[in-house]
Image 1 (cartoon, rainbow, N blue to C red):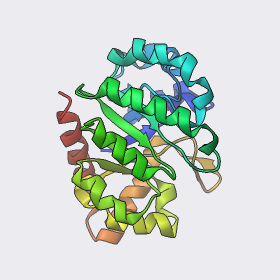
Image 2 (tube, rainbow, N blue to C red):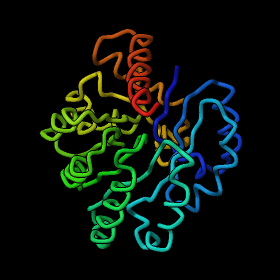
Image 3 (cartoon, rainbow, N blue to C red):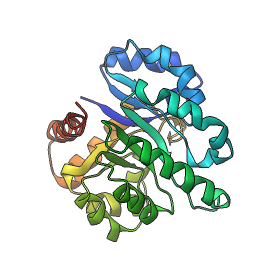
Image 4 (spheres, rainbow, N blue to C red):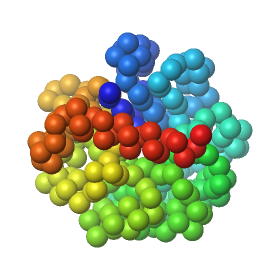
Length: 243
């Protein structure tokens, strides 16, 4: 069973064919959006699918659009159990809109606090701030997408009951491999973050999360089918919390 907890299907050049192939392969996908207006465009195409869901997002790197989009976020919040991509980005690319990001993310967390939602979190260069806000707003269900922060913070994230989604780019870097080695197996999920990653000269697809399964199997010395079962159980334990 392949599970992709963080993919941007709407940003592929051929989103309909990706949806169709994921359905035919029986892949479970949580498809992120970067803005509520993108969610509104995509929602009708996901509504009848069995294993593919669309998340309501407000990407931190699109902070200049947050104020004009926030009413649409509120309007659509009851149309999905999945919130993402949301979070903070204090890298050189995002630091200029730090204050807007914090304001938006805080408002989102207050809106979803106490609701049956799962959040997929962007936390680049802002991992501690993100964790602090999640705890402050008593968020129960969150996945740290493509975590690249301090390994010392991993235990705190785990103790808070949160998960990490691992993609093929992480397994191909020393920092990513080190981070993965510190995450308990019970807190691991898989993701593609397609189409933002390339495997060789090809754009990654949701089914390519099998590369992560193979890596965990080899490094943890666990059979591939056991890793798949582990990820499946982790995902089922997470979504059980919102049912």
